[in-house]
Image (cartoon, rainbow, N blue to C red):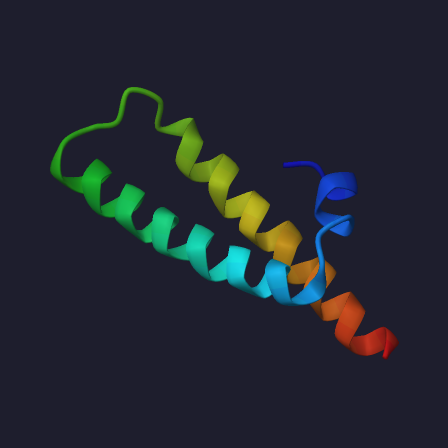
Length: 64
């Protein structure tokens, strides 16, 4: 997900999306530790997407 797409999401929906993506990330890491994923780069990509979302949420908090 690109930063332009993240900026279009409403603040409350963004917070919910972060929780969902973090749960998805934790599940993906757990699955990868049990049996390797087909594409382990997905973990890195998802971690960075979560970071982008958290950054945008924090910027919105500071701009209030």
